[in-house]
Image (cartoon, rainbow, N blue to C red):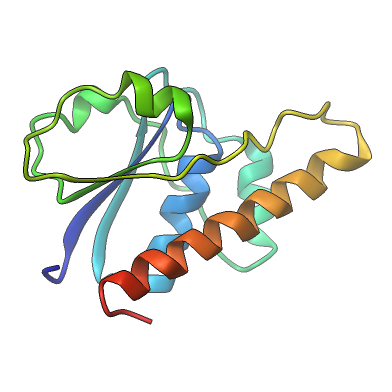
Length: 142
């Protein structure tokens, strides 16, 4: 894959999983990829996603929640859906777009005051980091 290939992460709300994945790939690839994220029903970047990424010194606080329509006419090299809903409802992109699907659990499923809440965010961050590592290895990056 060419240097600075465009990678788009897609989730329903573009608030947690896709934002965390965007931050991880930007960080781990040292700018080798042009990385963005979007949602079919975008919300805001979740404050706890920002917090959980700060724990590993990745700042996603300046990232924005975008609508998928902003990217339909863009040349995207790789589209990665990170939830089943986004995978099902993803609009058509040109045939040359490489599509991947990572079915990642919503980290905000548990009530925000529960002991499992932040633990689940950390678990999802670790899972996403593993997928990003596999993605990078598949393109000869480490």
